[in-house]
Length: 153
Image (cartoon, rainbow, N blue to C red; front, side, top):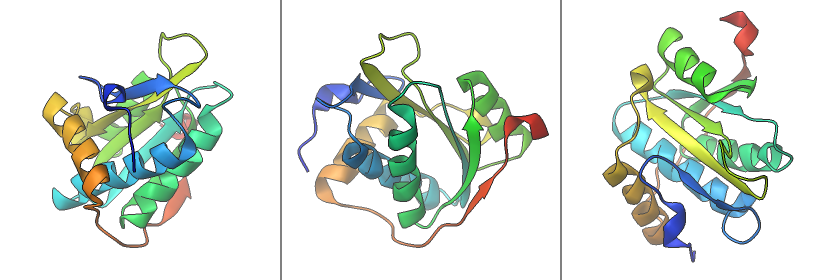
């Protein structure tokens, strides 16, 4: 798969929707992220999204990638990023991700990802996701899915 290397940033993966960020790209990013989590012994992550129009499709693709790597998903529904961080730590999940364009204009979107305890991925780990995608170095499995909205916190 051909990826724009500039979408793999220091703290997240983000870019212009359609040009750089597509559901196909996010399916691969989700699978690579879940591979990283699984190789570290993780089995379950939380995934939320902001209210951008593009977020629902990107989240669905990201979740499909996570589950294809054998990691289960706790769907956090519509969630601001700080609440995803809290849910990840509070529910002792093995990681968390939020589909969000953050402060960027509406034509952008991305994903912020963390380890257990809401510890952010390092820049090297984010770059390793790109390497995994380009070499198709993924774990395989059938992760589950449950919905657990933030109001349950």
